Length: 438
Ligand code: FAD
Image 1 (spheres, rainbow, N blue to C red):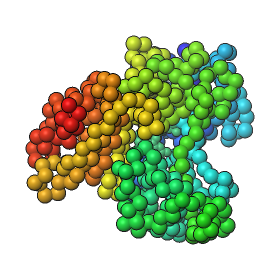
Image 2 (cartoon, rainbow, N blue to C red):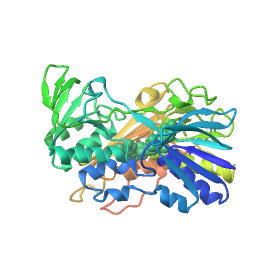
Image 3 (spheres, rainbow, N blue to C red):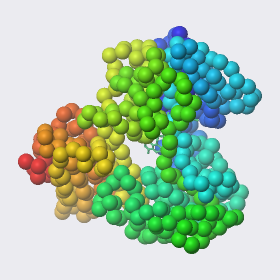
Image 4 (cartoon, protein in one colour):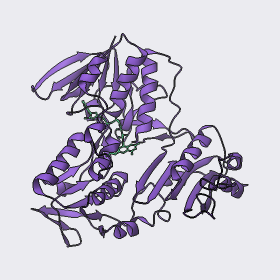
């Protein structure tokens, strides 16, 4: 049997490795249109800031190490179209400039997303995105070649924020340009009111309610008429699913272009599976579709699909909560569950609690704030947000596990936390949310 995988990074490479582990005999070929495979996208910003001091450690596997596991990898090979009826693909070898057909028994699609940009940055030589290792190398080469010590960052999502933090850590002057005043949309505005203050405290030049309309040489003109020095511009403004090549393939896409999948990872076409940033999947805790461009889902779905194809087909995907966390200088910010606009459609009440992350009498105890959205119907937690400077990761992960195991808001009182003064309180912040719900 021949398995073909489209895309060789988080989802694709993981699916290949899992499948090989489960099934030593199946033929596996990965087509990747870029230069590299299997690198840690999530770590890219931290190489800019220096916390990943060795860039090569970001590379988990290469075509050569994959070959040792009998996995064929073809980089610089772009899949141009899919014929799911005929079970074949049209592939373009980008280096040789030649096209050929490839037949499959099973097809796994993990094409991810394409980073968005704005019209004013098209054809601007010093404008970059940070989506893969090539981008990272280009950004660092530009800094070195042009002795750049100033950067303009646009985009207030998690990648924009990570870029700001890491360019500051690198010692560069950072200008942040943002269309509105709303920074980091996954978080409630009133919980995220520290973002701008923190940027200014870190010396970032913040320009809100404006955007770049033109770049001339190293000068960017903004819609409010101001001009900023822009020897380098990096945009982190989201992604669009890279699914154009599936037009006419028989693989159904949703209205936004994401590949529709079920709990086996299967698409609407027989023997065609999909995972990662390009798929539409479903929430774990409510009956609703979602798209979550984060690594956990890609890794879990890789395991499910590998089992569906080559192992135990009882292994199913149980949906996502979209659990996420970012660090922004001293702050940690985490959310899970329905997005803010989605939760409004459900009858709910909000429980909010702030207390110290450990015994309040401990020197160095700091506040942690947790907000949960509780279903009026059955007490389920529909959404949660956690903000603080310490202990946020523990709380969000506990909440994710609690919800996964069917725990309600009231049940939070029964989470027996590990307590000693440096870690928590006999009634932790999560317990207190439960007591406030009862
Ligand atoms: P990708 O890993 O993007 O891989 C898709 C690959 O498919 C690409 O290499 C692309 O070239 C290739 N491809 C596309 N179309 C074709 C085609 N037609 N033919 C051949 N090849 C094709 N997630 C987290 O959970 N936590 C984080 O902290 C985090 N940080 C991130 C930081 C950055 C800078 C970035 C860019 C992403 C981050 N993510 C993070 C997101 C995470 O990396 C993605 O969710 C994950 O990589 C998705 O895997 P994927 O396989 O769907 O897509």
